[in-house]
Length: 440
Image (cartoon, rainbow, N blue to C red):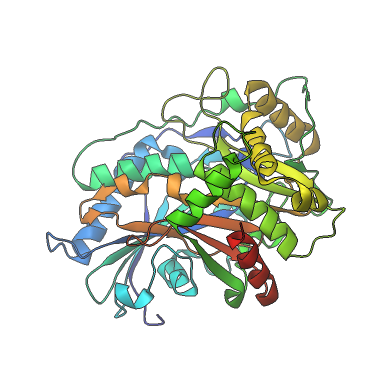
């Protein structure tokens, strides 16, 4: 898909200028100072809407939404409160929007709920020239690229700074945008106030926090706060990204196996699949038996903290839950025991644990666990199919790339159901991973 051509690219400003202010970023936000990219697909508009009209409606909707989401039109700057923090300067600098066309048809892309190299062309005009050389204060916080295919279908590529919004908040934003493109009002009123996620003074660390690692000397709060030396911005080698499909029968078998010995009363699909992936990946990458393997997975803490996050919370409230064990334990323990470790990783995230973690980050300026770890991200639970824009209802969505250390769970093909696992492994390792995933 090399024929993607730029039609128009512009900086969209709030419809009416908003008062200049600063927005505090929590320690949860500051572990995520990196761009995240995704792409959503739409069938050819049933109302015959042209690309020009769709782009015009999108830009108008963004202009309108930026009045309520004024922070999205801002830029990251050093905090006025502390020299080692970042915050948002709501300065009306704007949000980047691009329109593009390609002769490629949607069908030529194959499975759409599957990260692949071709998707990078659907966000190609959202990356600034010499971006790595730009200062953080000059980098936009959000971008959209609307691309029309040769068959008339559309793709909406998005790029956000993760420290601004988590997946739940992005869903709310895009629901609002979809509504505005239809000429309707906001569905959810955003609230970017992170004060409930401020560290306590003085910090009170009441738990060990294996989900985080201490920052190292090369880490900088003005680059990626703990990821500047890690390949988080780079995708893995495309020939090492693999898809493993779990059919509904496979998934039901995993859940039955988890309950077989009677030690667990219940088990969700995520818990059963996560435990199996944790064991299979740790063994497949040939970790030494004495090594501790840590699997991270985002848990929404909006309703777990006291007081709860406000309705429409527009920030990061997804905190890493974790399961950890030695590789020897992963090999020898009953499957139900591994599932229970995943359940405990979710259950431990009560108000005190979350606040202890925020305080730990305040003291240690840490980042999500780096040592012998990976993150498992479940995309099928985001509710993206609810979004209906002026040009049609969202058909499906996918991350653009699989980054090193990330394993994605996406819905399987519509006709087959189940789940697709996407991860980066070398050839021999993926053969072993697949074997372990399919064994009883």
